[in-house]
Length: 334
Image (tube, rainbow, N blue to C red; front, top):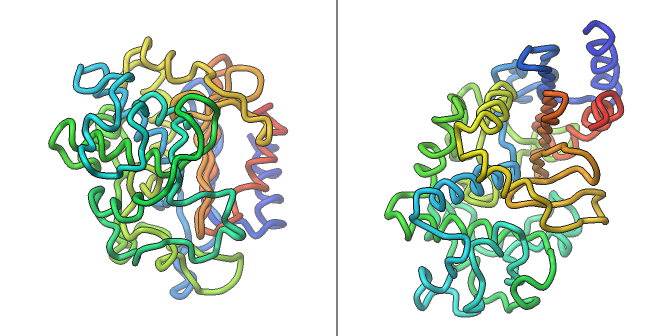
């Protein structure tokens, strides 16, 4: 463990890492350490218990909430979006299903097309961010984007699809999406510090998200004021250790449901990975991971079932996590 600590400490100092790194093997904590500042203006240090935004890491939790509803009979993978949308979002094709959306194979137009974003720190929201606090409030942002390809034809990473999944889950149940994630995913997983926080009223334990390695400018004007199906939940490294253990222990969805979610549906050669339903998959082997990258946020958490190894890196500046993630990847073959 000392060798691992020394390597991470050196990489953290070299890259000016700010965040938390945690490694668990066979359910035993091997390494956990914090670096940098949660609040630069007030020089508040990060701790191992600091709560961080995880950006698109949220998509895995959205997918699990939806799969939980599928297993309860409230939704089906074959449920069409149109059956719950009614007259809303008329450009979403009638044959787009829950399964298409989960697999990023829906072909719908994206309200936040990452291929069209020049810099993650750009101001890209098309509506005022303070108006994006509930799922229904995302409708104006989701509307007006023409279909890109026929449903099921090809893989294309799509943020809008996961907000749409949140909307479908709400309409199918009559329960607010944030509450569904809490009751169907976080509570059974024992993720006691994971929640959709508002960026304009963060509690003291939450790290501010910084745009760059230096400076005081945060991401509060770059992202929805409260996250939704495609990103924005806050969590801790410890909660993700609990998450993977609960997920592969059958406490969130059934083993059969999980097997369906981590079955490769698409190759993603540009990113040297594959994709299932809500989860990134290593190009080879059994590694399953979640990843998030946005203005002021970088996050990755990977679990390898055969070796029972979990590596989580969370950072509160845009590119902070990646040097440490590469180091752990080299060391653990992740």
